[in-house]
Length: 286
Image (cartoon, rainbow, N blue to C red; front, side, top):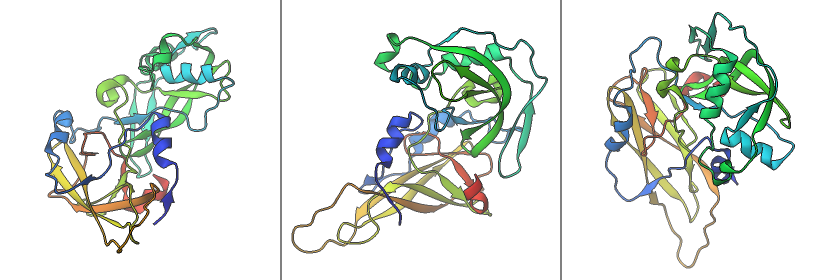
């Protein structure tokens, strides 16, 4: 198993995930985690986009204040945005799924971007100066969803002090579940096999072998709208005498058998936060 050094810190800092680790001792199926998803229309066509993250990977800023302003969703318009609205926007996934929608305007995307800043509750948000947005163009960007990365029509904004464009989906808010981002689990996602019945749920846990070994099993709860997975842990073999176990994380996973095909249901962790799940066959490109 591959070890993970600072993965836990990275997940927290990135602002797109919350941590929900394995639990020790016997646990019950996480039925409470399904409550948040009781209205999700898993059978709807097209299925709502479960948008998990809008952060631009690798985005840099000239100042720390600029980065904080971006995370807070504090923007000011210092240039002119395009007034023409494209006729159509689209979203596509690696499994071949593609859907089209009417496009939103650059003005609408700018306003939505400010409403949905990923770190808008940070204490610094009240005092940091806004990021000055100078222009925008219509293009395509990758966004994390519960079914992998979606290539979506997007408005790409240029701001003073930002070292690259940052994107906001150009699809209407009605196409996105809840109209905005959904809380993302801090797990490492999962895969579903070709039958749609065997779900592999990945996470960061303890070592698989050695004196500090930990074993895991998955406990699952299902509804017509979602599948919730909790991870139960138990210590493995322990050698006699004092031992020292580090806090190093390891990529681990558990496989659970579903009672019915996953289909359009959302996969969530024990807290109800969404997990990215891809078909096993295309996981590397998902």
